[in-house]
Image 1 (cartoon, rainbow, N blue to C red):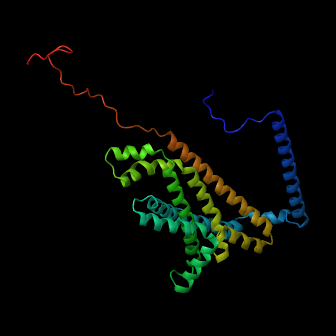
Image 2: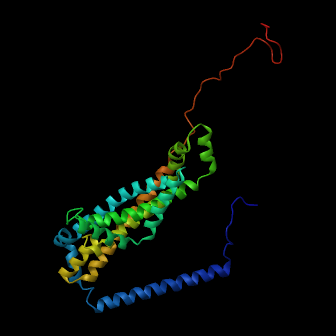
Image 3: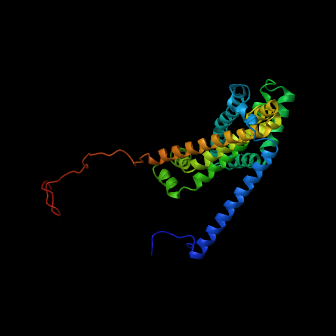
Length: 298
């Protein structure tokens, strides 16, 4: 029997032919939809050269697009850092030995995972604006950061918990057997391995942070989507402006995905050893007797 475990039957000739036909049909449908969209845009005059000319000038980039990119990256970077801290703290809290700590952390994580991000942005923005927590110019940014941190931090906390639980039980048993406490075993043995194992999911969540920063549009935060709308209003090319913004989001997310793959490959190539090698000879006391005999000094 082959050592490889097969979870499904390999498709036969008919199945492969059916898959090929469905793929061709799906491709033709996609091409047809794209053609209809381009035809509608052409009829509306959105594909004219003058609609796209502003993106080839420095004024549109300096006034609209670069500030939009800066706003998106600012909210995303701050949220990523805070969400990582939040996720590690509450993820470890969900793995604590004390039941009340697990209960409190579980309630916090499950609550913020269930609340929509846009709703949290509205709620935080109203609190900050009415109570003067921050300067009026900072209220939209801080509301976006708060919502993204709470939601994505809760998701990261759940990733930490599930990543540790996915490890073999022998990892924790080995730590306990050498005298480590459960907390020390978690921090020094389980958590580093879990972070490497869940790295693809973590980086995928960072992509979500970049995309969800566009929700700040609803609370007047000037990020890439908001500035693209302003650019479209200024140059009367709203559709091209949104298409350019969408292309930028795709580039950012693709770059983040490639970065995640590079980091994961680097971590997996890193050698792991049980400890430093030694050439010290065993500490054996040699006697004067032959094997099985009686020592000479007895």
